[in-house]
Length: 415
Ligand code: HEM
Image 1: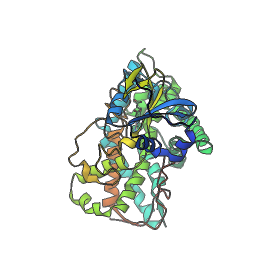
Image 2: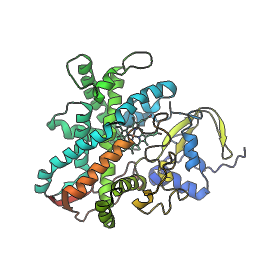
Image 3: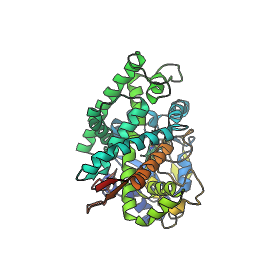
């Protein structure tokens, strides 16, 4: 292989990553006119890759493993240490089957119906409030929805606190300093809370339906026939509840899209396929997951570059969702692009690529889509509202990002 793989000359590019955020990888791919480059991040050599073919390679479990790929600081906040995200091979597939059984079949619809009921319940309060911050409201609605669905008891008085804790874990991804420490504290506290609940289920002090996530996780057996260690059971239950709360980010962007593209309102009301297309385009267009990481399992060559065993590789999720070889005018918000769209598991990857049952792709994509559609229905058909002047811009350097105002509504009236 030739040795002229594009590479960044700085000793370390961590600062550039923090300054460019979602666009860090894409900016360099454009500069090098390449689908890969080498760089150094957080003191290690990293290969960044982009494009549909890169995604196919990245999800080939013969070439990549997840064990040791995520930095400890991400595990201690976002995902939980040594939980499903960092597992490989049969142990991963076995654990993944637990998640698949709780995220498909009836579950997306059940969750969407629960979320819609929670949205309806906010109307009286919203009608008398001077203003509403949609992001904060969504976190609470989704925390209630997720806990109800999972079978996790949640008192009204503690809802805001726990909703904020889930959000802090998400917000700590890509953070240093106070945001990181808040995420760690929130995780420690939440794991204790959920451990206690799992313990109550196992000891028979708390009865929950057999179909619930709490019951399934508490009673799930590993390949060796043992129950999950209690802290791991808590982490995996959190791996179901926390990402449901994370849908609040997409809901906030979705409200922004409705506001900035009022031309779609008629289509949304008159065309039965439009809500689905709109939700897909929100997930493609707006930044949420910047990239995903894995380590090379066995040395191979791709695009004349040697991928040595153990090297950390980052797949450019944001860049692939804005790749002009895949998407016509990628920086324009155009839901109709999804009308005749042919599903391809490596082209549209806000939740990762490949097959969720056989790899690390997110199992919660249908849940996300259904909850977003229920929320869109609520915003379009259940209430009228005004959008006052506000700073709804979002910072592409901040990972994760969000409209700065959190999206403010006022003059809410029930329809
Ligand atoms: C993994 C995105 C919602 C559960 C992932 C991954 C991404 C992602 C990018 C990593 C893929 C990879 O490593 O290759 C999102 C986004 C969501 C969302 C943007 C919307 C807010 C959900 C929901 C659930 C969920 C609603 C479950 C209720 C998981 C789990 C994993 C995962 C358990 C780990 C899968 C594994 O390692 O095998 N998600 N997700 N996510 N997601 Fe989601």
